[in-house]
Structures are given as structure tokens and as C-alpha cells.
Image 1 (cartoon, rainbow, N blue to C red):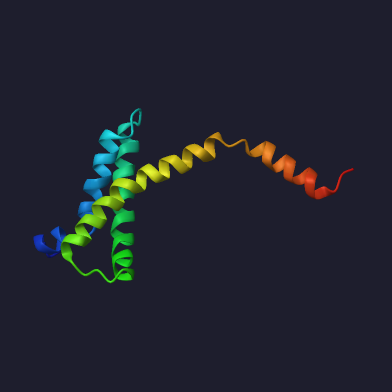
Image 2: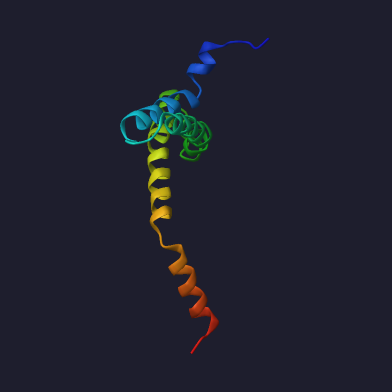
Length: 109
């Protein structure tokens, strides 16, 4: 049987990361379906949970409140950044770029 420790859950960077991602999913992703929003919350929580500890360790910050704040911020921003990157990838005309690169590197006269 799993041991349920509320203090450990509350101090986990995944919880504030999920809350930050939830804010983003509900407020800042208009037109997204509910499954997409759920995936955004999970992904934002994972980004925050795995990235906040090393970022704070790098800056030598050991405060539990700083961990919560950084996790919330990473959860909040991670999906916005990913959405912007995916939008840019979708809007890029890859065929023209590859064709231009191939003709330029082929040395055609």
C-alpha cells in the first residue's frame, strides 16, 4: 500500500507547476479542446517538476517558497512557450526552405 504524505505532496514542485499550467490552460489557450488543455496541464507540471529544482540549484536558492514560485512560473510559462514554438513551426514554409537550401548547396549554375 502506498504511503500518503500530504506534506511531501504540498512541497513537490509538480503541484505548483500543475496549478500554473492549469491557469494557462484555462485562461490563455482559447480554442483548445478539453483533452488538449488536460495534456497542457500534465506537460506543464512535468516541465516545472523536473526543471525548477535544477534551475534553483544552479542559482543556489534553497527556499521552499522560491521552489513553489519557480515551479508555478515554469508551469505557467512552459505551455505558452511551447505553443508559440509549435505555431512558428506550423507557419514556417519548410518546403521552400529545404528547396532553397538544396539548390544553393547543389551548386547549380
